[in-house]
Image (tube, rainbow, N blue to C red):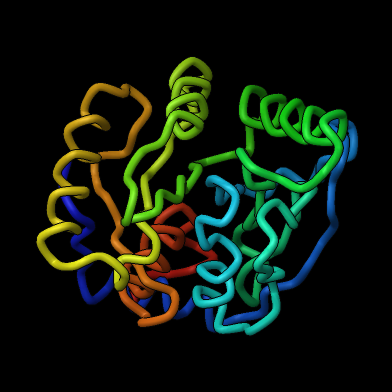
Length: 221
């Protein structure tokens, strides 16, 4: 496992993709309502309060594309957005797992929706799994990783809030996460280290997303 190392061309391609429109398509609360346009998808998943909304807003250059809240668990559906001037790719904002201020029955419904989506979505090219850089992999993260391993869904770890820990602490977390990911067959071999607040790793993450878009729609620089 290594940290993401993007070329200038990769960075330029990512910039070109996210410079275009990012358009909300729909919010889905049941599996039968998933879009059927066949467009390739990338999904962002993570524990509640991992900083997913802030990171998506930083990626897209918007301040309110994904709702940022101090209350964990505010994303309560699969939210679909098209990316790029030619709608090259769909970005999926998934409900945070773990803590949520909601009735247990509703949380159970979100969990079932996420599991069904991960298990059977042909259009899903990769899940970007967000892990808090201060804490590393938690039990709920393991459950999601196991599910994606079993479903053979490619996923890539993105460390969030990397501006929070000290340099030595961050290095320790990165090394530990890398060692654990090596045991998981569906894990992509590069970790992206980010901070939405500081802008750290945003170009590299954009490049990783753009690499999954069709070449004829987002050409290389």
